[in-house]
Length: 345
Image (tube, rainbow, N blue to C red; front, top):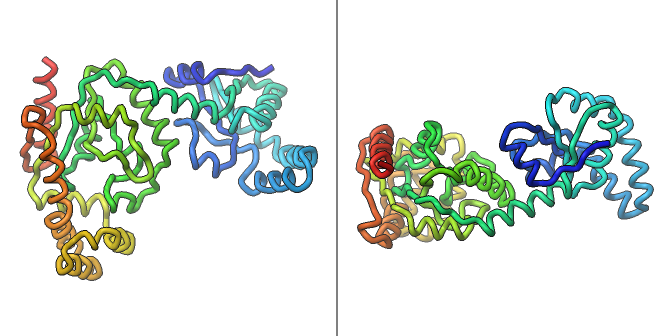
C-alpha cells in the first residue's frame, strides 16, 4: 500500500535531493503554481478535466467518476510507464490529496512501483508556505543593492549568486524586472510561485551571516513582498551603485531587446507618459515609433527614472549608505566583493 507523507517530511527529503515530486494535476494547474522542482504527469489533461467537471455539475458524481475511469483506463499503460522511468523515491500530489493522487498512488502500488502521496496535496503545501512566511524572522544582516535604472543591479546579483554569495534575486523569483516595463519579454510569476521560491531561498541561506538583495518596492509585477523583508530592507546597509549613463543605456537595451518588443514598449510607455512633461513625452514617443531606442531610453532615464531614484535615496541617513562608483559591472562586482569581505572579517 502506498504511504502518505507530510509536507514537512517531503520538504526535508526535497532539500536533501532524495525525492522526486510528481504533480498529477492538469497542465494548466501545474503552470499556474506547483511545488518548485516538480514534474508534471497529468492524470487528466485540461480538456478531460473540464469534461469531467461538467459531468460532475450537470449529471452526478458517479457519472463523473465513471467517465474519469474510462479516460484513465485508455491511457493507463503510458501513464504508468512515465512513473517507471523515474528512479529513487517518488511522491505524487494533486490539488488536495483527493481522487487523482489517491488513484495514481493505488495504481502504481498495484504495479509494484513504490510511491508516497502528499497529505492534503498542493493546497496543504501552499498553506505551509504561507505559514512559513507569516512567522519568518530574518535574523541575518542585510545588504541592499540600490542604483539608478540600468546600473546592472540584477546582473551583479546573479553573478554574485553564481559565485556562492547569499543573494536573494527578487526579480528572478518574480520573473519581472520591477518597473512599468518589467514584464516585457517575460511571463511574470504569480504570488503562489514567488512565495514558494522565496521560502526555498530563505531556507537555503538560513545559516548565512548576511543576505544581499536588490532595493525593490513592496510590489514587483504581480507579487507583493512580505512585510518582514520590507522592514529588514529599510534597516539594512544601503549600497548605492553609480555607473556612466552610456553603460546604463547599453544594459537596458541588452536586457529588454526593444527591437523585438516594440509594441510592448510603446504600450508600457503609454501607461506613464502623463507623468512626464508633455514635450519630452512626445519626443520619447516619437523615438520609440522610429525605433531610435537608445535615444528613447536616455530620455526616459533623464526625465523620469533618475528623478524618481534621487527622491528615494534621500530617505536614508549617511551612516546607513555606501556609494559604489564604477565604470562597469565588472568593476562594481569587485568593489562589492571587497566591501563584503572587509565587513565579514
